Image (cartoon, rainbow, N blue to C red; front, side, top):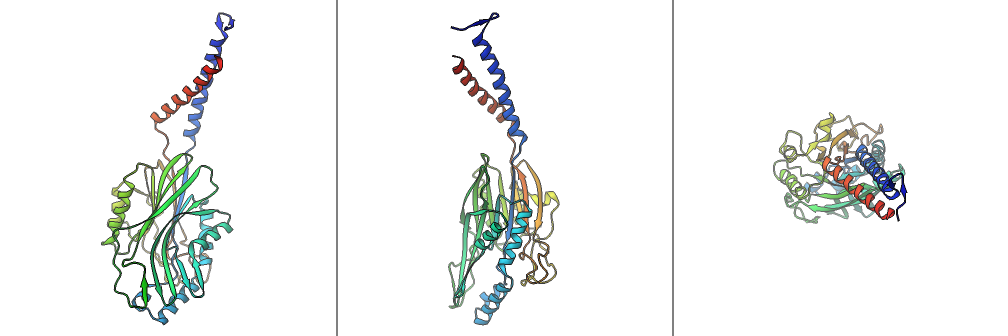
Amino acid sequence: MAISLGGMKLKQIAQRSFFCLSFAFSIGSIDAAVATPLDITVMTQNLYIGADTLPLLQSPDTATLAAVIQSIVANNFPARAGAIANEAVQAGGPLLIGLQEAFLLSSPSGTLDYTQILLDQLASHGLSYQIAGVYQGLTVSIDGFSSTDREVVLARTGVPGFTASGQGVTFQANVPLPPLPPTVVASASTFDRGYVLVNATLDGQPFQFVSTHLDEFHTIAQPLQAEEILTKLATTHEPQLVVGDFNANPSESTYAEMLAAGFIDTAAVTGAVGPTCCQAADLNMMSLLHNRFDYVFERDFSSIDAAFLVGNTPFENMQPLWPSDHAGVVATVDVPEPSTATILLTGILLLGIRLLRVRRWVE
């Protein structure tokens, strides 16, 4: 039995009151979601093996191998990794970091895992990351020394609402290796290149992240490799970020290909258009950066908040002066805000759920 109060039943009063409260709470929830855009900061960095390795392929003798190893040791990747980790700290701890030339080196005297060294340095700087995806490229072995080129994406851990998982993909368009002497053993017949595709989610908003290192042959394999990435990304409609060492200046066809597909060069928008490649092999003289090869491209994010270069100033006054032979790029973008239709639909759904609860309560 409903109780009458001044001509209005208590049940009716309860229903109307809860309707108003539910409507207010629903609108408040929507406003809170719209008023708090999701910032996503990412970074790309070519780590650089630490030596010019081309002479070793051309003349794989003991003296050349010794010179390459000496250069790698002198260029001290653990120290350079500390400088790169510091750049990540100064950038606020990017959610995702794309690494190129994340080498795994082995010799009779030990192993250098560039990815693990950087992970340890990041941890020592208070940043926790894990590997979200790896592309393993060409392995070359000479007289007990081997090098494996890898493309790696690191994902920040301990961030509420953030998940990331990826896989490596080999390009179909890879350049054949030249004839190699019997002393050189290669894992493939081509200069294997590829990319890591990561599917990520932040607070329920999905997006994709690709890190790549395109071929140096600008007019042969490189545009075809970029096309392979674009074809893969065309199968979904999520906001997307493509980062890496493209080995292409903005005047080249590969860059034009990215723009034609609807991607935006974040650094160009913000004016951070300084050169990113390449320092001297010994990392021990005045800056020789003159090419702009490294990029963070975005598509379908709502805005670009910032973009800037890192690693383009010396971190010490002796070899190695520079964290890498490449500068890196950091960019922050916003996840798209919900459309008006999405906001209204969300409000209707929230209101319907709350009214259903009210009806069950008063009945």
